[in-house]
Image (tube, rainbow, N blue to C red):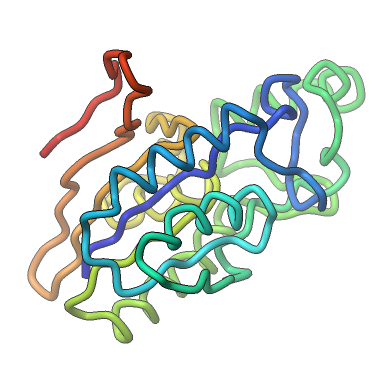
Amino acid sequence: MRLYLIRHGHTAWLAEHRLQGWLPGIYLDDEGRAQAQRLADHLAGQSLAAVYASPLERAVETATAIARPHGLPVQVEPRLGEIRMGELEGLYLDEISARYPGLWEQYRVAPDSVHFPNGETIAEVQARAVAWVEEARQQHPQDTIAVVSHADVLKAILVHYLGMSLSHLHRLALTTGSLTTLDLTDKAVRLLGHNFVPPAPGKENAHVHIA
């Protein structure tokens, strides 16, 4: 199975340094919609068997653009949803620093040691996301599928299959509107490309792409 792991496009909340989590009603901004369209154009010539997405609007919007050229529905999968940040959702980073001193900094340095208040741990996120990937491997053993989710969810999947510790989660960068390609076969796991962002017309792409 070939997995196109796609981070959703940009939102206004990201620009405001505000945690989105599972809060409803957060959609792509103009930049995010342009990113989704560039991804759609980039993947239009590929043979996709299915497009899956987190249930959150920003992921579904991105997935809808990607699925459209292929005539595919977007299949919503709750296990691909963002990490639940509980009481931190909706807060700005400076508010988090004031209310929960050191918590966000700890998550950036040692993500596997943090349990968000009334939320999840990254280990719980990894468990649900990887369980879904394993089911998808059974359903799509020879297929190429697109998976649209969130940065830390996708990174949790990647560190699992690349044999990395969850403590190294933030060593991986995933830009909004980016594409990471992972091959999963019975014999091997191969990372074919990481954090590729299709360039805007007339602009040179600066992100890493391994063919």
